[in-house]
Length: 116
Image (cartoon, rainbow, N blue to C red; front, side, top):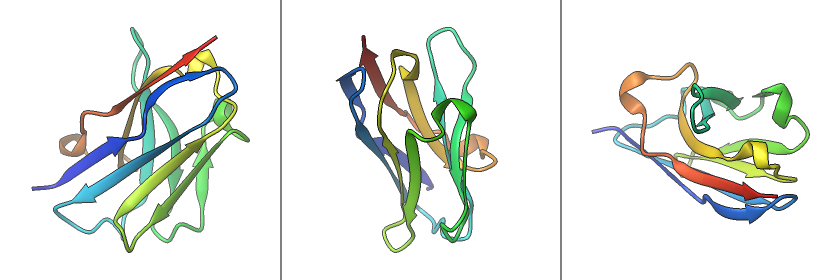
């Protein structure tokens, strides 16, 4: 059974940092591009960042460019999202998935709350 388990969220003040992790089990994801997505209250889930299968290429939505960094460790089957200079508008539940997403792989996500 494939599982993607997100962790590392929490409550942080504006300007602070968090590092999210996504641990994959049930299959090897090293041949897949992976992404982070987020859903704020009352909004649709949106794309945040993606990393190629090798980790050499990364992509970001405009609102997080220069603040967030996505990376992966294929030996550990884990994807990371380093989030710096956090803003209240970054408050959301953050999810990882393949990119583009595979519907059956959505996990519970991890809550990130940024206070002003």
